[in-house]
Image 1: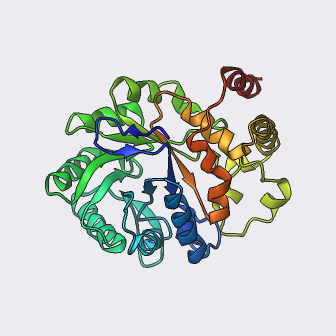
Image 2: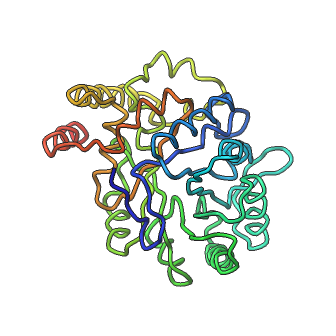
Length: 316
């Protein structure tokens, strides 16, 4: 398995990392519905046992719960993975989520994440969203200070555009960007990914299977039966006419995968990893069985003809 360094950092990553968004469980604004903690922990253990060496979470996932689950999963393991988390999304006693990039807020978030994760240092600390945008410089200066203080090893951003990254780079280096990137949503490929490649900024592509749409197991019936607190009920990609087209794309990926003994999800992840700007992909995992269904993407590569076939579908 070929590992890659994240930008100019010393973080040498497997092609795929454990995405812990859904592990936050249900009952919050951007949940994936109910989630069994034991299943989450089993997924993390399975992925680590199969060689995955990093986990990406965020404070807001489950309003702190995802970080706690990650800590439970890693307790007592002799070999520890890299652990990445994020700041900026905060919540109040009513569980209402908002953005805050003020220095004192970020410092509180960092300390809270360290406590929940039961770690002395965060390997990669990321600004989750550039919101509110006027405070970007204050936030990035704070992250740079946290790094100097040894609270975090490296600092990155998530969901930023080129202009926003440039504003941060004027203050301190940006180790990485975390953008959404999939065959359904490839928008960052036009400007943002080439910029990151040219400037040696690592890229952690999230939602390479478009939140489950490209797994080959999604159906209109499953979508209709989503729990009321599953954010995908409101996601544009899950609404018609997009849903029908996206499921047809998933069928194409499934057909390509069958020729290699791979799943549609593994093909979707391989598609994202084929972009030279992408360091690695964040893959959501909710059970050990789901891990087994995607782990092949760590080494699977699409042929030029298969990439062209996918591109022809996307652009027709």
